[in-house]
Every structure is written in C-alpha cells, then in structure tokens.
Amino acid sequence: MKPLLRWWIFVSLIIVISFAFTYFGLFVDVWDKDRTKLSFLIIIIFLATTVHCGKETLKISNAIEGNISKEEINRIDWRGRQEIGWFISDLLLTIGMIGTVAGFLIMLAGAFIGIDLNNEEAMKGVLERMSKGMSTALYTTLFGLICGGFLKVQYFSLTRATDLLIGTSEKEK
Image (cartoon, rainbow, N blue to C red):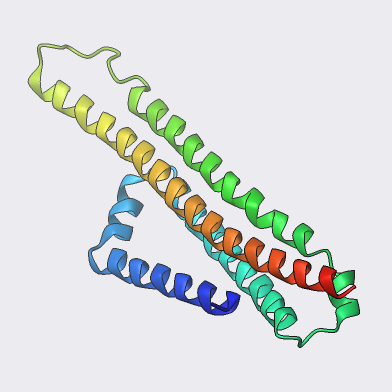
C-alpha cells in the first residue's frame, strides 16, 4: 500500500474516533474534569505533529513514485526530518505522566487537613475534591498514551516508507 494512502486511512480513523468522542460528549467531560487542561495540550500537539507526518509522507510518496530527482532524494536528510515525530510521540507520553502527577497532587493537596472524619458532609466534600484530582490524572494519562501511540504508528509507517526509498536509491547508485 502506498505510504500516503496508509497515512490517510489512519487519519480517517482518527477523525471518526474524534467525531465519536464529540458525539458522546467525552471532550466536554474531559474539559470539565481535567483541571490542568494538559489533555487538550496533548491533543493540539498531536494534531500539529500528525500534519507534519502527513507532509513528510507526501514527500516520501512523491519520491517513491519518481516525482523527485535522484539527486534530490540523495541530498535530503529523510531520517532527520522524521526525528521530530519520534521525539514528540515520547513528549506526549511525558506530558501525560506530568498530568498524572499533577492530578495526584490536586487529589491529595490538603485533602484531610482540618477535616472532622466523623462529619459525613465534610467527607463528601473531600471525596469530591479527590475525584477531580483523580480524573485529571487518569485523563491526562489516557490522552498521553493514546496520542503518543497513534503518533508512533504514523511515524513507524513513515520510517518503513523511508527505508524502502533509501534502499531503492542505494541499489541504483
């Protein structure tokens, strides 16, 4: 399968998943419960990097189809242009883990200071504050893992196409 077609099919799947998230109100739910908003930072970085991967995939596809001269193929540092995607996929995982720690800090920050453990209403308030921190931790972890994993799949496909291109141009030398 051509690299650009493979990338487009994968992006189409991401679009369908995004519509499902919107339809079921999951984005609104995440916006309300993620107090750090890191989940949306992860999504924005993911979308920008997906566009970058699409541009690089288009260039690789054009090179494989012979629309770029052999001299230009040999002159371009294909792997160097893809390193940013691998870096950002790991960065998204890291941001997700930072959100996890931030969520736990929100959850535990002053949760039991000055609380009468025998007062049922006070305990309900503590549990409500703790649930906000826990939802922040879980949502940022989830979005970091999913978006980081989706980027890795895209850049893996791009790397395979690059290997095919570089292997073909090496044989022609």
